[in-house]
Amino acid sequence: MTSSKRKVPPKPKQTFFAKTFHWINIISLIIMISSGLQIYNANPVFGGRGGWNFPEFLLLGGWLAGGRNWHFAAMWFFSLNLLWYGIYIFITRRWQRRFIDGGDIKALQVSQNPKRKNYAWHRLVYTSIIPVLVLAIFSGLAMYKPAQLHWLSGLFGSWQTLRTIHFITVPTVFLFTIVHSFLALKVGSFRLIKSMFISN
Image (cartoon, rainbow, N blue to C red):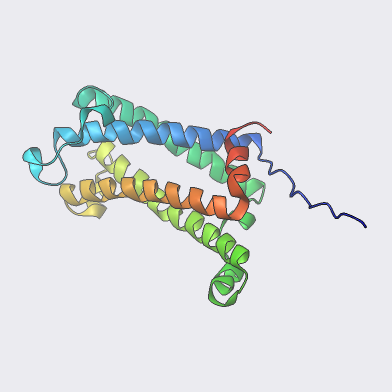
């Protein structure tokens, strides 16, 4: 009587650049969100100065100017990190495995394989966040330098519209992070997420 050993899937491996990108992304996002909430409290987007404020423990910067300093400093790390990662995935052709293509669209429509559908959903979510990140950066730059980049801030119409759009990108990116992590769990289990943040 022979016993068949269960095949253990290979341990997921991530490159140093991919891990560095994710760590810088998370740290800069946390700083930008907490300092952004500090800026928000100085003049809430919704309801004017008498609008609802975020609690103190979520804020970074201590006051308006402090929040702005933290926010704009982290913005450069975040933006340049995305730029370098974009160059990296272009040179290494990782975009072919990360972004959605016609095969994924077809899989979402007709595939009966749950794992294949999860993989397609993962690539769809990964692709759809790109325009949101671009919008977050452009709207942030328009508020950072409204005089020098008047042509950019003018594209958004009014200042209130600009602030509202920039604010809405925050929960969108936060929601993406949750969905992205959930789909990563379904596609590659906790081993996949662990491989992205802990050395192999």
